[in-house]
Every structure is written in structure tokens, then in C-alpha cells.
Length: 285
Ligand SMILES: [Zn+2]
Image (cartoon, rainbow, N blue to C red; front, side, top):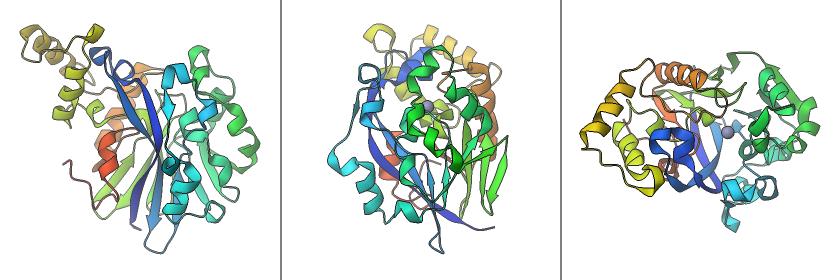
């Protein structure tokens, strides 16, 4: 099978309550977390782009606190990484939230892969789901969309894996590497901490910082330990995805992706900032 390398492309920051979205257990965790696109590269020079980052004016600033320095502007990041957007033939979109669609319009000659469910639900979102939908960023690109339903092999070594819950038609990207299957999780999980059984140390770090009402949580407190034990031994225990739409679906999706993946690449984890190339720089397990 063809092997690829993956480069996380850092394109800005959101300052917001990431803990609350991960789990009520970490509800007080405010932080600056990075916004990524991903560049998948074959040894033959093939370049595939995952997601499209955000346009500053298409993010409600009072919720998400977006900010970026000039070196993180998307056209500059692409240039620095040797990507000419007009030469890219394949773009894979995990979901149609505003921090994943802002610069898709740069890829004028690409097929853009999206789940059909995602297109329909993002065109006419439910309730507060609408906060993250900016249809004007992608509606003119629909003729470039390749709609898929469920798991789909894009090409040798690259597959789309349906993983709903964060949004209705959210998908992850399975990439074959020299160290097995790397899973670009999209927003099925924001942080390594969300896969708590696989990365317990990182999970406890977030929980500790995320005490309710600004209080630090004491992990040695027997009551805290009892509650965490109860959660971990529950059905699909230990999976903490950002449940924007459906908490049950996201736990099932995370359990599935966890089983499939040798390497995990979450949507918004600062750990990725030091991984210039995956799998070469992946050192978490
Ligand atoms: Zn999202």
C-alpha cells in the first residue's frame, strides 16, 4: 500500500472554553488552542489537503476568540510548505464548521470530498449548530464537491471514515504511513486528552486545570477518584469527544477510530505543534 507523511499546518488560535466542550468534568478549562489544516504528502510529490482553516470575520469573536499572527495566515503557511493551491487535486473536509472551511476556495482545481449528510445539515443546521456554519464560504464550491456516504476509499492508502457526533456527517481520514494507520480525527476529538484510556496523563492534566467555577480539581480526592472510576468503567467509558450534536454518536465514533488507529492526530491539540512530520516526529506511544 502507498505510504504517506502528514504535516500539521498551524493556521491560528481560538481562545475559548475547550474543557466544557470536551466534558462537563473539565468545564473550567479555558485555553488558546491551535487551528490546523493538514498536508498529506506522498514520496512521489503528491499533495492532499485536509480542511480549510477559518476566515477571521466568519467566527463569532465573543465565543471563539480567534487570533493569528501574519506568519499563520493561510496563504503564507501554504507557501512556506511548498503548496501551490491551484496544483492541489484532492481536498478532504472532515466537516463544514467555520474553522475547517475558510480557505477551501483557494483550491480551485481540486475535488473536495464531503459526506452528503454534512452538506445537507450544514446548509440548514439545527439551533446553536448554526453558530459554526458559514455557507457563503463553500456554497459556490458545491460543483467541486464529491459527495460520499459512509466509509470510502479515496485512493490507495487514503480512506474516509464516517465518524458522526460532533456534526451529522463528520468524517475522519485514515492515512497509511510507515508506522501503520494514522487517523486524522477532525473534531471527533479536539485533544489527546479526549482519548483518556490511551493518553491518561494528558487527560488528568486537562481535568486538573478544568475545575468547575475556577477551582482546581484535586485528583487525590476519593470522591473525584470514585466518579472518574465510574465514568471509565461505563459503556464506551474513557472517550471524551466534543459533543456539539450527539454525545452517544461521538463516543461510538471515537471507539471505532481508536480501534483502527496506530497513530492519533486530534483536531486541535498543542502537542501537534512540535510534530513537524508524522509519523517521524510522533512520540506519544
Ligand atoms: Zn468542529
